Length: 433
Ligand SMILES: *[C@@H]1O[C@H](CO)[C@@H](O)[C@H](O)[C@H]1NC(C)=O
Ligand SMILES: *[C@@H]1O[C@H](CO)[C@@H](O)[C@H](O)[C@H]1NC(C)=O
Image 1 (cartoon, rainbow, N blue to C red):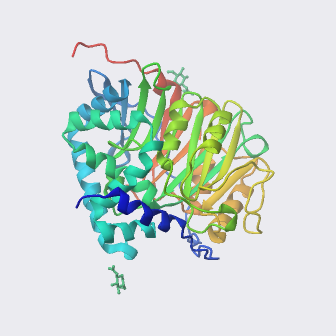
Image 2: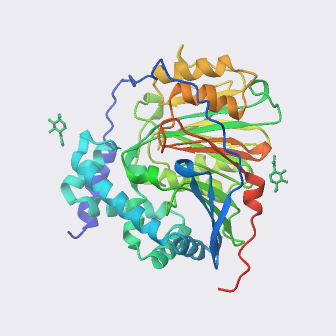
């Protein structure tokens, strides 16, 4: 089907203008019998597997808990190419599986695991899946960093995966809503007052292929392409939903399906959130810079974002939509409700904006451990009992140089601890290729 933009654009504008103001809240809550996570944390050495001209491949953890740690160096194209060379088979498998999953999910529509935006399902019904995604690409491209297409091209050239398919798949974050949780804790809330502890729990699809391709990609860009950062996600996934950088910034994210009217409107015309989060990791050196970026961005959908800066031990929860970007600390955190009490030196969100069941339990677990919070306590007594993080979880303790990562492959996850100082100090391959 040929895409006729002049015909389609008015339709899109009309849809984007429609906002259903449903005064609803989420009705989910954690299982009251949720168990502590008592699995020991894996703190072993990552294992070197192989290298290519601009990349090195390692494995962290063992057996079902293991994930790849991929280091890439160079220009965006070179970094994409290096990842593709190191993981050609996996990248092909993953991208093709995601594509099939997306097709299946779209057919199931409202019964699907992925909670698609209603306007997207309408586009698919009207134009087909490819064209609906291409439409999304067209309207977000002006706000997408050039590096993205260059890296995707490198990845495509090294793996043989279709460039268009890579681009289309990366729209998935913008088209679906995940329920997730986050927290930033510092000062009187934490055991080590020199630390900023930050949680990112991702609850998304566990029936899709994502859980089988966990990966941390550590970028070491050439000068002029940003600074070193680590993207926690999946093989061949170039957007950011979880990650941290050498400047000790880290990100958290929650999709909002139950906003209140303070969110204002959403829009499709702007920067996809997985790209603005990547820009934060790749280009921002401070919480101030990340704040400016989000304030000035052409924003799209309703989200709660979290950015922590372990250098100054500050964290902000961000109420984010096309209309607003509000940056909350512990003293002015919203929404205010008996199920979302303000807690000194903590900002937290459980699963959604209006979501009493999860926020109550998250608040209770934080309050019970207030002053004693450590990464171990968050893993054992907070996120496990709140029952968030079905797909993956990261606990960042960047002031102490650690990040703890767990993936959804087992029923109760084993966390893998990575030394972030070591991670950013890995040297490029020296062999002749
Ligand atoms: C969704 O599930 C309902 C109830 O099982 C069924 O009636 C409906 O046809 C399903 N819709 C789709 C699009 O599969
Ligand atoms: C992390 O790695 C660095 C570099 O190898 C090392 O100096 C440091 O002691 C490690 N940190 C911890 C807490 O083990």
